[in-house]
Length: 480
Image (cartoon, rainbow, N blue to C red; front, top):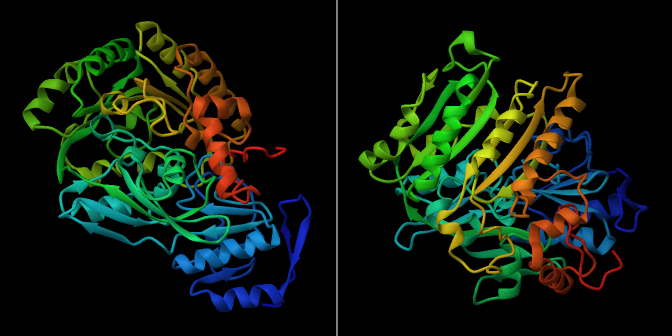
């Protein structure tokens, strides 16, 4: 490597990094060091949210823990800006450090399942689909999100939830241990009996504390077949659908999770062509209990009005987990806002419908995802990802094609819809979908009383704030 790179430094000034540093790094790695022009570089710096235009100066693709240690030491010793790419699915684009070093974990994606102990060990570069496919071979699953191309690391470190949360809690409630390279380049194990302060912080504190090379998850007997799918109605029937959704969600067992979505109907094969682009209301369901019980619990929703599409029925769990992938294609511009909500009174649904009526992009959507159940079990402060009093989480997802000149209006819609729903908030927000334009007030709202404790753990394991390309928690005692 003969390149002389100008790499963004932690002190705000570029740092010159030449062959004398890059070649020894490359020699020590089993993985690859990529700079612009190298094969694979463009793929490594292209992420899900097309709105993000950051360009790292250097990409390191480790294949094992030693590679990660070398990369972290390389960046730390030279005080270079460092980001970690897991699945590249973070809305704010925190996978990429503009002008800095990006550690691309995609080559560390092995999943080992121990069906006897009901545990899965997943590499830091795994996608949700990698884990679901491996665990479902044994009729097991852990709590993960509902888009299979999402990175396990980002989802988990930000708290995580999915269709199984009402039965088994947040994703981090199902985390048994992690292996992590901290800012000093050391590999540590964190669990309830080993570096317990670090383990506590990792269960919701984001990527602030190091690079997780392996996650160990507790598994549950799920599938391989569940009851699930989606029902689509004309938005003119939204009043009746929303009321049925509210009543069923309020009375449902923890086996059932419901999601309510309003959007313009996609140009998908399962939607009749005459409905493409028309306003619709959608309920997505997942029931992991007995099929006859599922039929009884879903009857009140399935009997509402005149559905355009009703695709609820027996489905492989792994297929349900990837069913929404096409709704979030790579390359769209995405501007999302979130809020955790308490019990949903009828007037909340009125606000939800009113805001949804102004959606103009064929990709934007407003969503209410049902929570509660086992989430509320652990005491406050058990994990920094709290929000255990939430009954729902709301998302306003402004999404549009790169050539759509109305992009600013779509983003403004997301902000306005979020603002209208905020009066019903429990006070929390989901850090995994927060945009980079948000201030420290939102960080305090996300973590509440846990923020000071997180700052103390940060000071112990990353006093110089090497891991700062995230929803950053500053080390206690730092100047900011």
